[in-house]
Image (cartoon, rainbow, N blue to C red; front, top):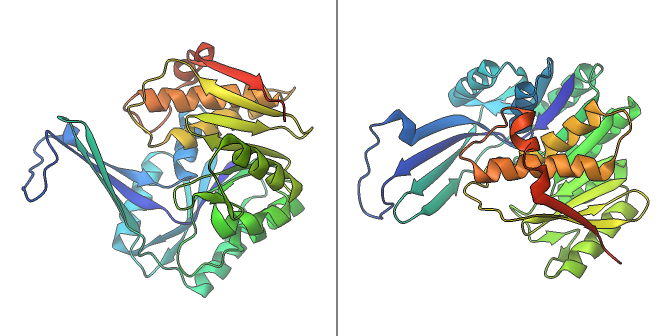
Length: 317
């Protein structure tokens, strides 16, 4: 089994219009112009794992209100084991308006979701009970209001005490505290923060310094997004840069989740683990999503065909 953790999920809604104009009514008549799907880091990776043939994949987190029931039904249609704690608050909505001519992209993210302390306690109990059969724990995304920033630190400690491999994608204070529990893999993200461990990220040297500091504070391996590249920090201290060649990005949504899936899938499928090869698979999966109008991966053959469009170079640091 694979367990993914999504504490702050949302219902994602995409509206496609000919031209995105303010102060003008827009009417959607075609199903192809409206997409509604369950969103949230970790959950998208869970759906990807199912597409790649994994039998038992569960998603743990919070959902709320009447929309939460709708959300869970969408998750269950993907054959994901939904392991959710229900809250009184309505689940979040993310709305994206995509114009065709000219090409525009406008996004509205809802962050009104709140979780109570008793619900956090229930999540901890549920997490302890439900990860026994899991090979790996993927913890990813932001933390909703009402949840202390040490939540990832607590979950990682529980998982590590049970001998589980932990992959963490987080930012801000939640990332900083989580490092105390020694996650195996860490990848920061920048949706809410332009800093890593309170350090401003400007040039490549800043990113390299941050990656080394993350390792110093407890992570075994680190992958940091650097524009369209990735900086890779292996456990032996070596640093590499993974770069795509000749790319044309049409879609960012889901690319980081695809990267995580491709990386972990290679780790699961290969006895002799190779950090760089795993990142090549992750990079190929992310590039496939970025160049196609898809949110989820479909099969390995699609993104493995992108492997020759990636290169990895060792950095002298």
